[in-house]
Length: 358
Ligand code: ADP
Image (cartoon, rainbow, N blue to C red; front, side, top):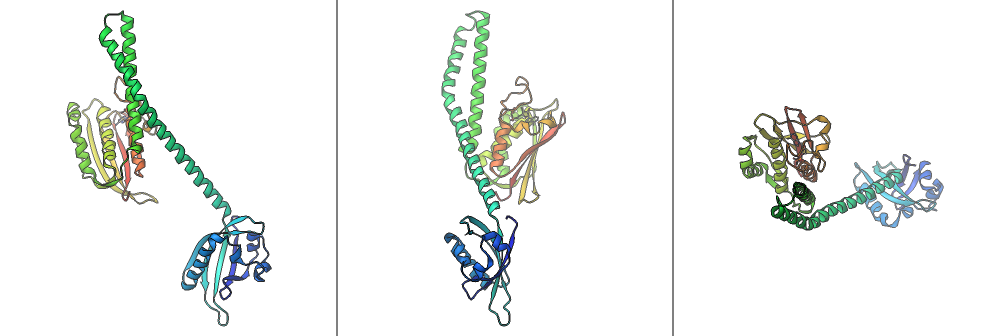
């Protein structure tokens, strides 16, 4: 029934009831034309009561706007008592010389489309709900695990301090591994907690000068930049509407990575932003953080944004693999996208967008 279009002519002197119609309306409603034309069945009465005011309001609107066609959606009860969603377009026709004023209505059965939309809405609701549950779980798990783990770690460290060298070599090794494992687990849990805080601690986005944020980040990283003999440059950066702490987090993670994953050359990072107009989208700001480091193999362009995904050994490059996942979550929360373009041994450019009117 989905694509059946019916045509109804309405005579307006008779309470908006049809004066002519084509056969497809019979298919949509289950009634025969004569039922309507003889007024045995009134169109306005098969409209579900909640939608009747909308229909009559739109009819009146159509009457007073002869040059406009007016669209609406409402529900009717068909002959079998089933609810049918109608999409309707109303247009006032020029008055005939002797006849009264007329509205022409084109109707279409959109029940299936409505059902699909409803299903999609329910699925989306379910997904949002389970996402929230998952986030809550990550938060609670990481938060509540911290305390007992802190206890394990500190007693292990105590054991290490007190008994290192007093037991045999094997015992020393075992204690070392236990301390190392506990410390790593603490790092992972802290990172997971930070990841879940992207939503739990989020603040309302507000107009923010991204250059001020960048300068603050560079100030915080001063020592790290000096130690690594890194050169950081940037173009003028725009005002954006963001949670400023989170923008700082994104810039900091990308800059730290650009320095950390340096090649033999001294690290050079350049930050810039330009306005782009994306297809079917409002204008966006495209930020880029470019480095001259070790680069990323194209097969991992997407995977590096996953939680705890790392490409390098922790002995070579420290870290837990949460930084880019946090960046992705923050950028997407602001309605943007993040990706990387890179060439192994040549360097990488991390891009992220922020909507101009986010
Ligand atoms: P971490 O820095 O803790 O390892 P991230 O989530 O920030 O975690 O990064 C994930 C992985 O992506 C890194 O382990 C590294 O392999 C790769 N990566 C990230 N940034 C860069 C970069 N600028 N150059 C090369 N590789 C990078």
